Amino acid sequence: MSEQKTDKAPCGEGKVPDQQGRCVMPEVTFSTFVMSLNTSALYHLGELADPETGGRVVNFELARHAIDTLVVLEQKTKGNLTEEENELLKNILYDVKIRFVNAVRKKP
Image (cartoon, rainbow, N blue to C red; front, side, top):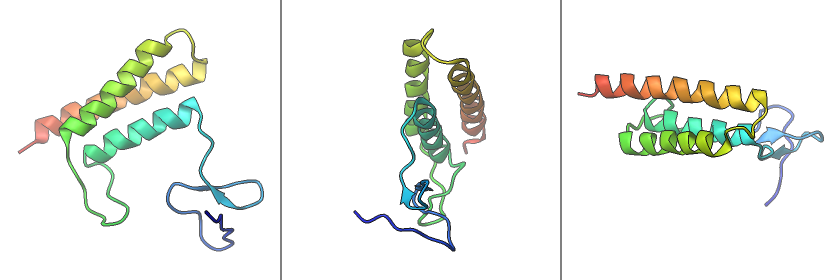
């Protein structure tokens, strides 16, 4: 897999520039993992468009699964997170749960 340096356009497909300017996948940290699950939930709630088609998908079952995964993560990591990680997870869970409830209420 070739890494490509781009001077004009930002990195695509979830990649970020490294110190040498090459487009690479971001480092996997607890925070990036939580953000990934949040992105999945938002995508399945139809809040984020498909990057290829521009269309929006609503799938409450998959959104609920991503939220449930975040809840399990919160329960299993209790007392083992930094203050920043704990706040991030707590805030994301609150936000995505509210969005889920609002989306279900709007359901035709």
